[in-house]
Each structure stands twice: as structure tokens, then as C-alpha cells.
Amino acid sequence: MAQNVAPLMPHATAAWLVDNTSLGFDQIAEFCGLHILEIQAMADDMTSSKYTGRDPVRAGELTLEEIERGQADEEYRLKIQKGPDQVRRTKGPRYTPVSKRQDKPDGIAWLLRNHPEISDAQVCKLIGTTRNTINAIRERSHWNIAEIQPKDPVTLGLCSQRELDAVVSKAAKKAGIEEQGVDEAKQGVDRAALIEELRAERAEEKRVAEEALREGEEGEQGDAAEGEAPRTEELTAENLFKR
Image (cartoon, rainbow, N blue to C red; front, side, top):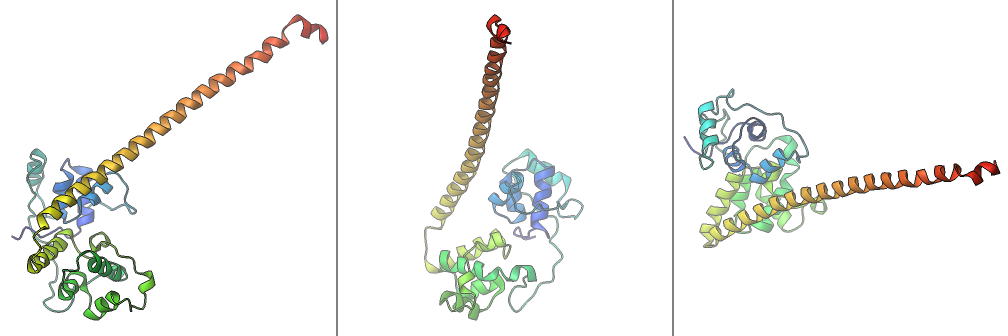
């Protein structure tokens, strides 16, 4: 069976694996066809929407034995047991759910800006669009060009990371680009740097909170000490005679 087959509901499956297993983020990302930073965000509860987990064992896509192999060896790559039951189209553009269609122009703009080596035919197949739409965005004659913001089509859910990587790799080879390996290594460094930046931000927030707590406790102790002074003065003989 092809190794690039992803679960039927990759985000929901990833959420379940994060919550119920000790698999590595890279293992979950590769099995579900998602970006590793998406898995990191799920684990840190930083996603804008909470996915309801989908058990891949009950769905028949994974076995408990396969999960245990992955937990025992972080280098092991999970193998899907069966592909999702989908209707394959032999002609025409990729089908995109209605809720995602409004995101297509953003994904096309991102591809045109970041991967100009990809042909229009490849963009049509990857995103599920038409050459007229691609040309309109490229020439900035699209009716909604003022609102189009380039966004990663993987993040938008228009395609999987595996599909995008395959198209980019194929286009790069055809264009004679030899720096694909360097680009992939750089992406790995950038991902690691982003994860470290997120951890540093959380550590700084914790430090600031602890300092604020200490300052609050010191302030309360100071107020208590100042509050005792007037009571001592009121008990002197001079104050009593004045009364």
C-alpha cells in the first residue's frame, strides 16, 4: 500500500494521538500528513479551534501493536492499515469543500510567491482551481485582489504537506534546482527555532508572573508594618491626656 495515504480525518486523528499516546510529534505529523508545528500547537492547546479526537484504532486505520512499536522507537514510522474510503475523480480539478473554497485565492497567491517554479497545471491539480483564476491573481486583475493574503495552502487545509512537498520537489527537479536538500535542512532549522521561541516566551511569562507575585507579597508586608505604627502612637500617655 502507498505510504503517502493519510487518515480520513487527519486533524481529528492527530488530536487523538496527541492526547492518548506518547508518540513523537514528527511521527504523528508524518502519519497524518500534517506540519509538525500543527501538532506542536495541538499539544500546547494553541489552536484556534479544538478538534474532537478520532480514534484511528476503532476506524481500522491503526492497530494497538503499531502504536506500541512507534512509542518504543521514536524513529519508527507508523503504517496505515487501510486507506480512507474516498471517491476518486479521474478528471477535472480537485474537489474542495464549500467552507474552504473562499481560501483558494490565498493559497494560490502563496504558491505564486513562494514557488514560482510550480506550473499552472500543478497548481490547478494541487489546489483544485482553474488557469483563469491563477492568471487573474498573478496579473492582479482578480475581482477580490485587495482582500487576497498569501497563506500556506497546507495551513488552510487545501492540501496536505506531503502533496505540497511532492509537487515542489517535482517542479524543482524539472527546473534544475539543486538546492532542495539545503532548503529542507533550512526548514528544519526554522521549525526548531520557532519551537524554541515559543518555549522561551512561556518561560518569560512564568518569570514575570512570579516576580509580580513576590512584589505583591512584599507590598502586603510593608502595608502591615505601616499600619501598626499609628496604633503604637495612640497608646502613648500624651495622646491619652489629650483625649
